[in-house]
Image (cartoon, rainbow, N blue to C red; front, side):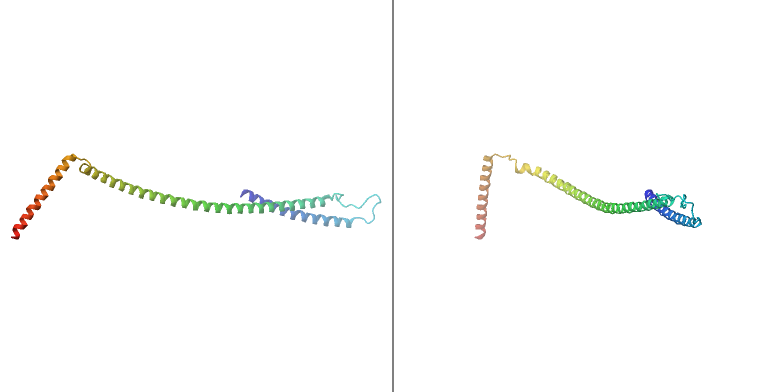
Length: 186
């Protein structure tokens, strides 16, 4: 901002300088023209008419015209530099605004993704705890059933003998039932 203010001041100074020097040139030209009318018409042969310090290089007026062109060039260069800097600044601000919006959008998306991931993690951990508790209960029940199902306290021969006894007991029960049903039907 400070450089921008200096450039604006330089442009204003150059414009004021051009204006002032051009007015000075007008005044000097009027002065030299008026002086020429006061000179004698007839000059001494070895003396030329006095034209002030207007030598081959242009004298004071030529120098002032050079100053005007310098001021004009300075003003034009400063204005061009200011326009280029303003254009560069506008492009930078546009790029920065776009970049800022893009980064903000990415940040919002990342936060939403993070929140969703945390929610999913919490829900999964809750399910895991429930499943682990259910597994623990199932394992406990399995341990209770294990002796009855897996561990055999009776040998094969003893089981065969028990089965034969059960079959004989069932046959006797059928006989008793048959006798009882035959006696009740008579």
